[in-house]
Image 1 (spheres, rainbow, N blue to C red):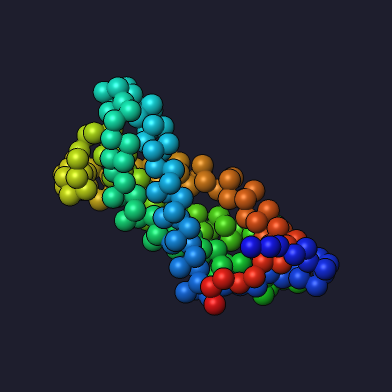
Image 2: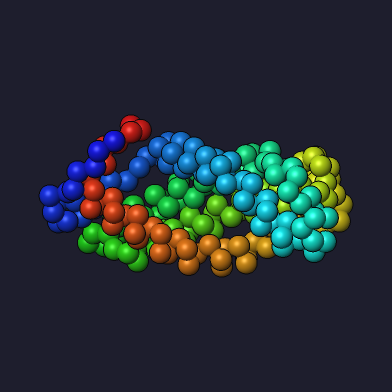
Amino acid sequence: MAFEVAPSHKETAKSPSLTWRQSILAGGMAGTAVDTTLFPLDTIKTRLQSRVGFNSSGGFLGFYSGLSSAIIGSAPAAAAFFVTYEALKTGLSERTTGESPFIHMAAASGGEISACFVRVPTEVIKQRMQTKQYYTINATVKALLKTDGVLGFYRGYLSTVVREIPFTCIQFPLYERLKVGFRIPHIIS
């Protein structure tokens, strides 16, 4: 795929908004691809951070423990992010004259907040499975409900949002600026 440099920044100052269907498909597919590909690295990180230690949590065996939970939550979380991001970006852009990095920061922050409603429960389940506390999603869900109730699925929600927002405030203004700098043909219509 070749990229063409845009003729001028002013001609393409506003990036095209995606439809909600495009956001769901593109976001869901991209999120699932990334989560599946990088899952072994995530397992190593989780086991290194485990209270019982790396070896007791599974060591270098079973890198894909908990992958099913990640896959189940990955597409919905990514889709929630991009649907929210595009809706906020469009709404905020309509109230101003053109887009700015601050619009992208606000839209991306809103996207992270909505995505974490899906991502955090699947992360809690996934991490319990990665550290060999439980071996199935069903067993993990039952144990969480029994010990912590529904709120147990959202343990770490606020810290996850606080961790993600600075990254997204850097990433999405850059992403939008690079979209303006390069003309990229639409793949999904």
